[in-house]
Figure 1 (cartoon, rainbow, N blue to C red):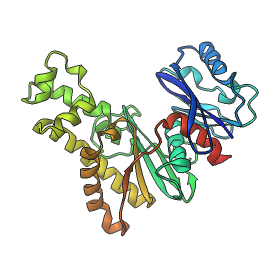
Figure 2: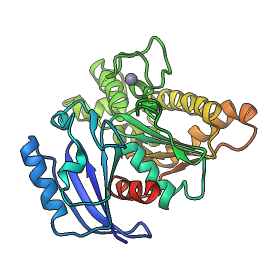
Figure 3: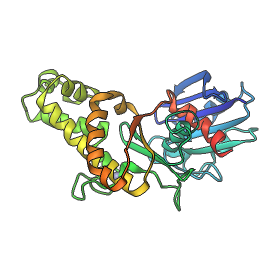
Figure 4: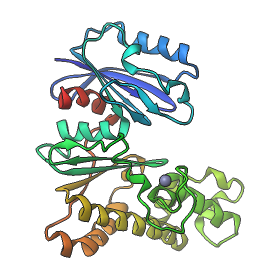
Length: 305
Ligand SMILES: [Zn+2]
């Protein structure tokens, strides 16, 4: 049975058919339309050529999984708030929709690093930090669908103000945006570093990848920035182990692509912090699904249907 997976992102609208083994075919990707009418047209063009056994939709924000209603969605996709995603795919008999990070975890449960697990936690480390929780075999939703927003764990009560209005959330200190902001301020203050040499003319061009690369190449200042960010992430993950006792913590998103320079210090610090309480190994692994938006969306149908 082929499931059509649709990934509604802030910049791209992606889709593809996903088979029983989690393999994608017929993938499409277009810029996300800026108005509701254009968006509805784009969704219909995606669905029309196919006759899938079901449609799964992953979307930013908070989605009511009973009705597919978009409850909360700030930012460029604001026009979807209050809409039923199932209304955008007329004729489909089986439609499931959920938050994109929770969908990504569903993909890992179906075909990736959480296969065969009943307890797993996923963090998507990108511009911000998203998350999903599999607890005792169920994707945790909480009382209003907010559960799993692990980027908003408070790691420093007096830290920077977060997009959510709280202070010192994990994503204010460990996210591409946070790491870039710290590197930019280093360049603006004229701190001696290879980052200052490279980006003096255009500090805003610094990327999180560039900071990790400079740290890996031995730049002391880049290391200081990376080590601080990793320390906060390690503290948050240690707390997650105490709260949820997962068999595995899965890291996805662009920052997870940093690989060994992230995972080695992180694993060591989390083990040090959590081992005594948890009493077993605390494995932290990379996400395995290559197109988590599409495959995860399809997994919502497989996993929940
Ligand atoms: Zn927050």
